[in-house]
Length: 100
Image (cartoon, rainbow, N blue to C red; front, side, top):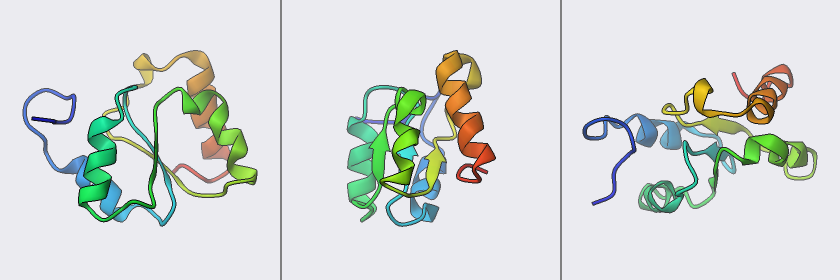
């Protein structure tokens, strides 16, 4: 059984985030295993979401000029699990108004 990698069973927060994401948004998952979030997005009818792993925050966001879209950070992402480059990516996205 697939589930969110947080303690205990899922709370539905990822589902809500995906449902509320703008069309074509980048959804930054909390680890490199994208199987669960991609299947969840499909189940929710959100095949438009571009599910990416945290490493995307290092350089992937720079492509937003070519491939515009909102960015949603999964609720389980913890700042301490991100390296300096990834944290800088979040700050840059925030400055640009892409991430609240």
